[in-house]
View 1 (cartoon, rainbow, N blue to C red):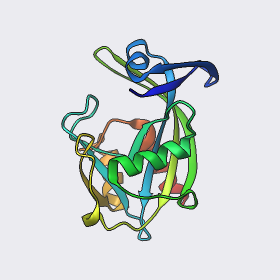
View 2 (cartoon, rainbow, N blue to C red):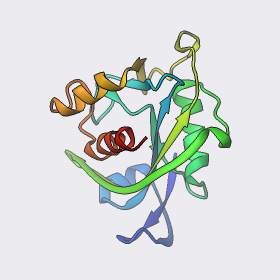
View 3 (cartoon, rainbow, N blue to C red):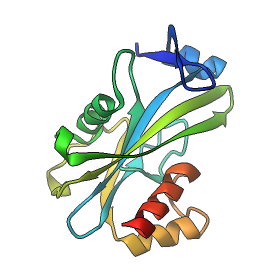
Length: 176
């Protein structure tokens, strides 16, 4: 069972932990991370969520994402998640912090309140060599900048409705 540090509405640790289930049942604030992987050509690696996911099943999503476990830092969680979901080894030098944000997603009885950390990873990856965590991810693919921007601008066509991460990606493309 996974346990998360609980935060107050200002993002401050309150000295309590709760299980994933309790956090989502009660809408307790906790931490999450996500990252975008780019190759040297500027293409972005996206994962397709499993059909079994509660939120956004069978849609293209950020390269990697997940919860930050109790006593874990965001970078550690990102490294752990990318290894678990995509079996990709990443080191600290390949990771750059981009931005922090909050998000709330509700589906049925699940209330997912996150303080998010967003990271950028630059790494050339041969996706034919990737072994996916099938209960989480059904596929991965490199997307050109123009294609992902078109999908975002076309009402998130075929991608998750995570407006925050996609807007940060657009800003990243505009800036760099």
